[in-house]
Length: 124
Image (tube, rainbow, N blue to C red; front, top):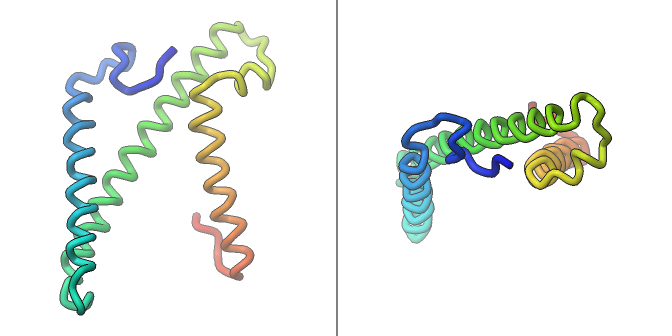
């Protein structure tokens, strides 16, 4: 069962290094935001906060693509395993489907529900 992008079936060389670099980049951005928040005037740190948000956006895009690839691969393996005769319980029993797809769907559903409660527009 495919559980990470480091699985050899994806064929991504150097993905371990990319993951370590992005994890350290995330921790650096988090520490930067904490240090910037210690100041009295956030208006003086606009560039720092803007760069931090851009960095978080890059990491979020990477994580979304990784989740989509892992989900696709796990669903593809499940369909091939059952040769087209699958049930919903097969997908709900799959760890990757349950943890990734349902959590992303729940989060997006919560965003949409909250935007309707606050009379905003959906986030898409």
